[in-house]
Image (cartoon, rainbow, N blue to C red; front, side, top):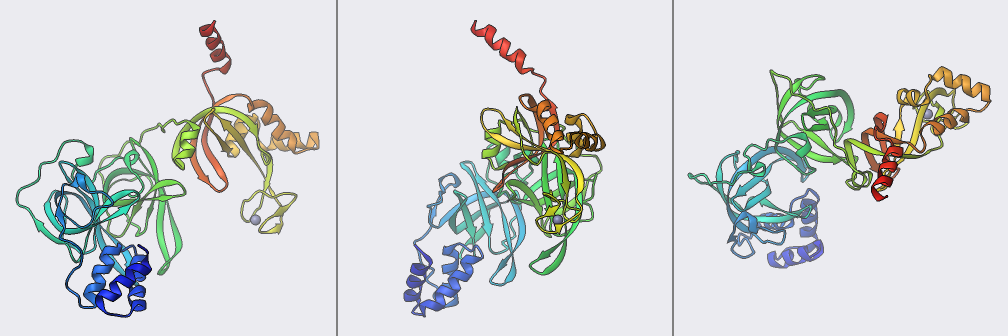
Length: 426
Ligand SMILES: [Zn+2]
């Protein structure tokens, strides 16, 4: 049913002007209020207390599907975190988290503050269900009644049933909310952004724990978050940013400094190129493949002194005629048979593969009277060889690019591997 049909139904039910109802409805829906909640809210606004809809049925959590209509469910609160969203032009605080019984778990959003906290067993009467990213989500709104049960519901074992929302960085997924983390702040920078309420300061950087690393944004800078600090964070949520899950901390997140240091693992997951590209980007990943080509714009290059973009014939696309600053980089195409990525090496990694400094490169270009001489040397050295690469993979309209932090020739010699293979089939 589209908005127009919903508005028409509701207007004829309530005996009010359709355009007025439609304007109200689209306003609510725009702020992510589920359509059933929005209709209920308008019924109240226009003075119809009948509530509409059938009596909700009592179900187990595992039975709830995105197609379920209103339900009544008894479950244990696994997590509960507040977040502020903009709703009808003003800030509105919601509570979100996860509920479970012994048949399954389900995410919820509470549009009212029912005072939910982790560990409690509740019965939610008349909760509406909406689909979120293919999964059902319970909505607890004005028409929902919450009662707190004295007897705690028993839950099965297993990490997905743990109370408190504790998680390792590697387990986090886009859409997660009310998560508790213990991490070390690996990188942190303060930035001023143009937010919806004017200029505002935020912190952004990278968290690490034993399981991995993820970027973060702290929308309401916490003093405990500084480079090198180990912290416990309660009520973080996860959204996707540039194809990678990003940990978000709001004014409602709690940050506590930890006495001990959180260990940070040194390894990143190793993936096939095709798999890493298919997930849409990975913050820290290892890939192994053959360099099949070195792209144009590699070797000795010149950057704009204003914006650092690569300049062509002394021209920056934004700043026009500029005096380019010499630099080194490589854009190498890595192929492992499942897919390809462009691996970008910075000046230091480029010096390593080139086997010389920027000064050496300038000297070589002068001698050859051709700056391409540097790229040609690099091509000769790396094309056709196998490399292990680690770094940050992003996938966007410019393709799949990996900003390399390490770039090492693979230990397993392809020649030896080919010989082994021949022996096996001989
Ligand atoms: Zn420029």
